Image (tube, rainbow, N blue to C red; front, side, top):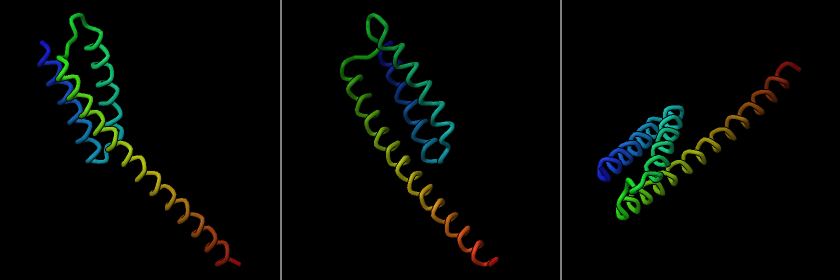
Length: 99
């Protein structure tokens, strides 16, 4: 059923978004791998598992998720840089405090 495949795909995307919102990156990664596997299988079916309008809507939802993933990546990168700078400052302080 085309509608079932679409509903399932959208539910998986919502689950990924929920995992990202909860900062559960491991779960988000696992869910994305499963989503990718399911989407590839659905598009390999003859006839296709998605109607054209469903495929377009799914593409839009995936694009929005990609933007969310990029925002998370950027935030993690910024936080990692801040942690590194904090570590360098702490080491420098401790090095000077002992001397």
